[in-house]
Image (cartoon, rainbow, N blue to C red; front, top):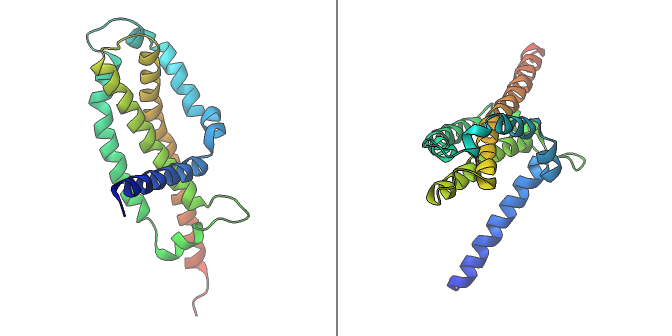
Length: 180
């Protein structure tokens, strides 16, 4: 296999993974309908002095100080999530039915979205810092992505809570069944 074939294959795998994520998350419709995005926009507008005026401590400094730690915590939490429950429970919530995404993939989609939003927000902050974009459209978008990345933490935690509830119900049901 030539180098270019290898590069092409890597990009195809990357594209396929992004398509799986986007479909699992729910696509553009879910993004636009997200209450977390709406709240992030409201918070960004309310915090306009933070990103719309020249300041020493800019929006990108806050993002660059906060997001790497949050991203590390998220990846650790995601690793723990993958190991959640036992094999029977994971099998129960896995596998799509009637063309719908399985609860297992929906939960993974929520965490992958959380990670991707953080990486996008961090990338915009790096760009904003490199070019001293303290105000303007990029500053608004960057600050909004930063706030949205914080709010997607709530979405990811609520997704974990749903799965914990399912697991609790499943354990209750299996522990109360007569043993043979």
